[in-house]
Length: 308
Image (cartoon, rainbow, N blue to C red; front, side, top):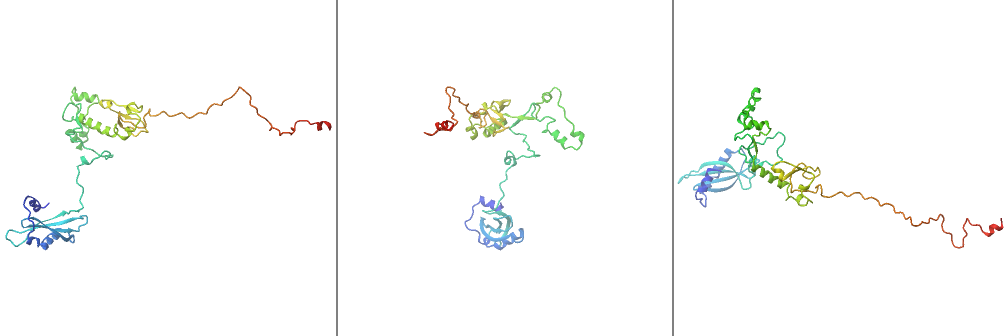
């Protein structure tokens, strides 16, 4: 923003621009063409009043990639003087200018899942999610990746220096914790624990649509793997490969249709056993019944006997 524009906000702005300054269009164009590349200064757009005997001429910018931008040339003249002089020339965005999006710090721009192989995510030394570990010291331990000594060793080119490890004093809390495998420069604070629990409960908790439609909660599911610590009182790990939260930390109040006791698979239907009636005999005729007056083919007639 120009200095003349800044001054105009703190002083009374005249209603009409100074006549001599407003008529100095060619002076303003020459100043813009001197600063800009050849052929990028377009038509004169408007004149605005910045203060007493101070006006700004706006010219269209034809520079590729600067759509809607304007060349702003501020001119002025002294009191009772008739000679208009140049104040400053600057390229400013117009009302419909194409602008870059507002810059957002990386800490606010980063989203879950953005990190890939080889990416490093630095952690603030004053991160509220962390607190000093079992070393009992506010400063990082000597052989911690956060200490200045280790940073200097990592940057050194001498292999003898990079391989050197600072051993904590024998018998100290730091050395005992390191022998037990518990030594960490920083651990999760109570604030970090609560924020993580809230985040996990929002993703796999009782208020999710999946849990609302589930027949039962995870606390009674056979696929739930229990975890230790204070988190084990409210969370567990799902081990159902067909569930939507397989391998994830879920709230005990979460649930899905893959609950181990959701439904018992019905057995395949078996055909009914045959029914045998042993109280009476069934007739099974071998020949069809003869017609009335007809002689069965196996019977002997009187005619047959007379010719015998």
